[in-house]
Length: 586
Image 1 (cartoon, rainbow, N blue to C red):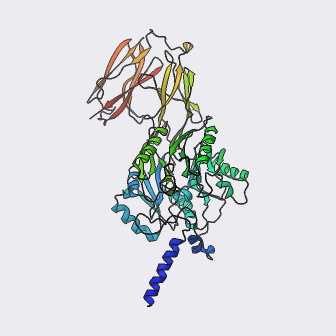
Image 2 (cartoon, rainbow, N blue to C red):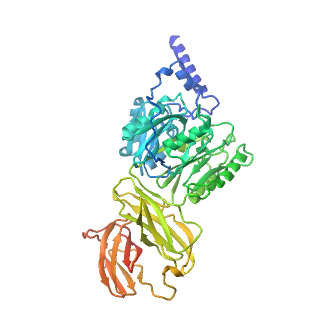
Image 3 (cartoon, rainbow, N blue to C red):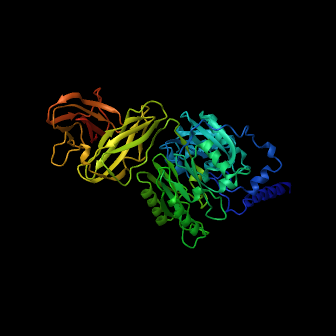
């Protein structure tokens, strides 16, 4: 009888625990069936757990640390990452983790009681354990996006973590994770008292950010101006666009319906016309398209149709995450709608690898983005560039900020360009002071279009470009000929010309030829795809006018055979620089 009573009591406790996720769908079980996962919304059950025990909540120490030394720059989602932050027990499918560990490290928050299970289940599901680093700390939920660290670079160029106060006070263990993560990684942490949440925030890395107005309503005792000032002090935000909610209920996180894809492009949810958020979303689309981005141009708004996944709830296709050159997108099991959504990403974010993941836990108010967070490269190589648009008279100067946080120097920085129907040509970028560089696209012989991209490599081996997925993606604008530019007119012999190589692809050797109008000192060398010099073929020797041919045997200056890949032949002659790609195929 006593045993039966205990069973009944335990069952009642379980029923109470489940039913206390009031107003929610049935609570989600984690992937390995260890526990019920706490939902996004604060629940009566978690408040009940802490009733009368608030003094036992982990202390945070001094909540309002001084902000970082300025000027501060908040890191954007698409900047270089070395890892991703998740929590175990999982609210994510293992096939996602298996893809993540191909490119980045997995940082996993886990309690000591679940540590052994995490190791065992990661191993049995094929996760590369050499790519996993555990943060063994007490925690409450899977929502690493909401409570995890935000990253900035301070005025000294050093990375720091900004630790907001998580807007779920009954999840005090989650609230401490940024502090513990900073300690583990050796990154200084600056905490502040204002409530915020990562799902209600997106930033462009150039001091512009967006949230819903929830950031103001939750900042008890602070005026809107005081909130904006805190965002400026701790995050460097100069323009903070706060948008009205799209519905009366829900969690009001902006990442459930909008997403920055880069500094100028925003992805925005689209729903069927009878849905209660339809009119508000159409208004937000118009509003966003009227707002000026950090480039000085208005945002380009891309719509993604989010069909009814049940109960009148739209799919949360916008709740994706960008990690390096990959975009990981939640999908919902409808082949046609899922394929259409992925196609929107391919159009709006060209050059990225777009991957979809179907998982039973993804719902309209939370999905993949809510449960993961990038861990950013503190030694990143970053390029900031405002793309050339519309029509310009040639020549056109291409300017960029190129910042190597590794402080190892930037031996290679160049603009690659091509006129319509021509091959890529490279021009080096010269210093313009204070991490700024410029390279010039010369005027063409006649009005045309020009494609271009920027590529740089630092001495640590990091590479970066703009657009970020170059050379698969590039910028295009119209360029006019300019008779005063010094460019020769049609019919005149160019001072130097670099011809395509033959054969191409090649193995073991290929021949390049170039033509000079006059005898000139010439440099001809070979660079690999990362911008590193591998072979000097001609080093300043004067060559005669006319045609010169030279053969390369696929070896570097030390005589070592080079691996398969694309290499660049670079010719410097007559004050100009040309290049041609060559593919070594073994």
